[in-house]
Length: 307
Image 1 (cartoon, rainbow, N blue to C red):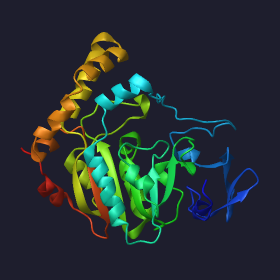
Image 2: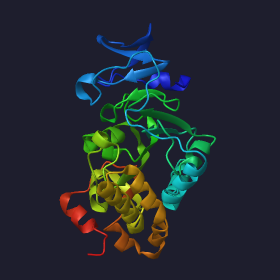
Image 3: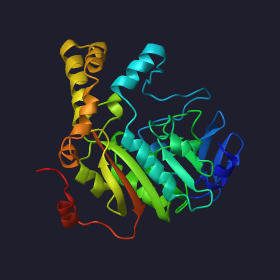
């Protein structure tokens, strides 16, 4: 954990400041709230309200979902079937530019146990302080936490990046409320969330959003930009993969079929924005914290698809 993060830590249950004590962390005004430190990393999870049902032992604790490390030919194949999205690269650059006038802005990365595709510009920005957390221990996180109860004070960060995370939380609206809470008054959020993607990460996959649904999820934010993160071609590639793996009961068969049709990604460039929104693989939202909120009639008028 970076030294500058320590003063920001809060009890996820009460919001009280935390202080290091022995091999753990103690809420300064409530000795009943105590959290362990595992390999130097605070585990700040309210077990009673989380999908995590126990604290791990004192050993390296990785994600409960297996994530393969790709090298050589498998890495090349991975890049073919899942290339870095141009929209992500451009949007991350926009995010960094929006923070350019702030002195060492703090960016909170939710799900920061691994570095997301297309985020290099953020991690390379010399004046940005990145604070990362995830539900599991990783060399990249400053603390382990549940995004439903972010253990940071109100208005403590300048921006939040939440990429491919909201489908894996039980209550996305609660997580977005927490994002709104920890952001400064003019704070920025950038989110990417699936729309038409098959279940991935097994029991840890819960929700999908249309473009309008994603916008309404972030209704307490003024929209800077929003659109597709992977269009119909990308979505079709997902479907081919999962159709073949279901037909042959083989994950490997699905991946081979996906590799054979990798070129479908490029079809996204031929399809207009309006048509893409109705059948996108995923959507993105870039917005600024607001004191106003969209209403039910506003979101009906917001619809931007081709129907």
